[in-house]
Figure 1: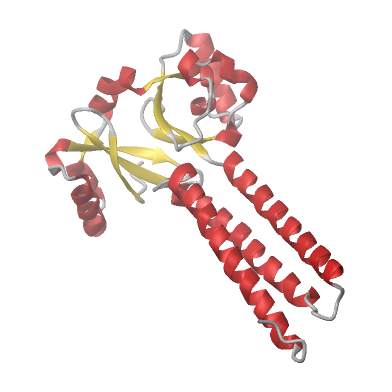
Figure 2: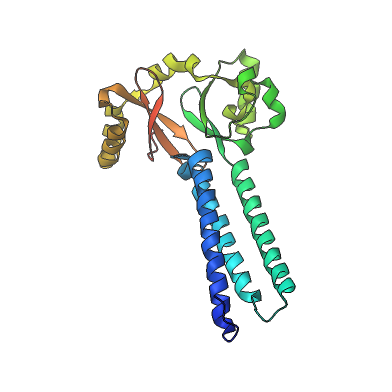
Length: 256
């Protein structure tokens, strides 16, 4: 395969083979990130896609370029293996660190926060507060976000204290002691959600986008309602089933 009479060709072949293997590894990593940690729409609203592509682009380019730079069939075999081994270790370490960063920033809960949905990410939650959550919610999910809601405040003092903390950056939805099973807020969500006719009247120019979202649910428009959603970077809209309150579709529309 390699030709010692043409070292440049050898370098291109070795670098190309390394690039192909790097792409395969990147595709496997993408399946994990986008299929498990950041399913739609979180790959868009939680910044997972941009972060992952930056990490993978650097990793996929770095390894093959380094291989191109060091590959030389005239080197002693032991030295060549050492150099290539170091490159692989650097590449694996970089990818591992990048995936760990993406994992820490992953969305863990879609929380109904009294009159809106808010996406909560692992990095926003103080782990020392997790024991204050209900027993079945004390571990953050690793297979995609779950849907929760917030309980009512115990009294005015709790409401005042936690609201002040929220103004300081610690959002109510990131407070484990307020979490509860989403089903406990089912009727509240349905009551406070608005019919899609309101959304259409406000965003007539987005009718095609709304039509596509409704079609994707397989439900009649009258069987759906909408609730605003706060994401990491943007404001979106969640379409819910008017009977169960379960989220069934998402729209990149700021409906606040």
